[in-house]
Image (cartoon, rainbow, N blue to C red; front, side):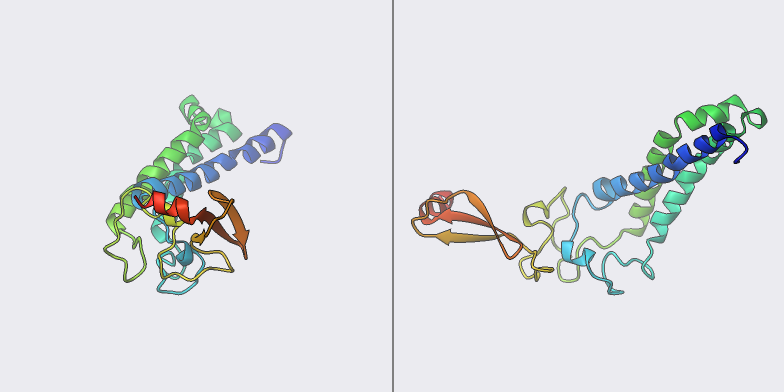
Length: 189
């Protein structure tokens, strides 16, 4: 593999065979498995009953989707490193390897996700809708969730006779929208 610079650079350029399937798994998880719904506080916990802990801290079906998709690109990589031993078709697989592996991992991850059906929300919120990006307005927080390191749900302050309506302010790492009572009354009508 290290006999000349071209072969070495070809090998280094093959990182897309490993990164493409990771991207495919992430895209499939967001768009097809969870519909864009992530519970932010659960991302920052290592509790074994957490919704992102999976089995002993490893998403095995995600890892399997990555491995299967990455394996599809290995013949193309082998042909790029040693073209005289492999057919031209394998070499062509290397040219589309990133796209092929990314799409394959999306398909594998989506199939495994539909079979496994991971928990979308923490206990007590099973009835929360899972429509596309339902949690986006609350930044992935439920009303009863505590802030994480000072960052939490967006709070709205009403300030009487404020000239700063419709502006944003940061206090203690929490985004706060400042609106006047007049704007609050007109918004509720």
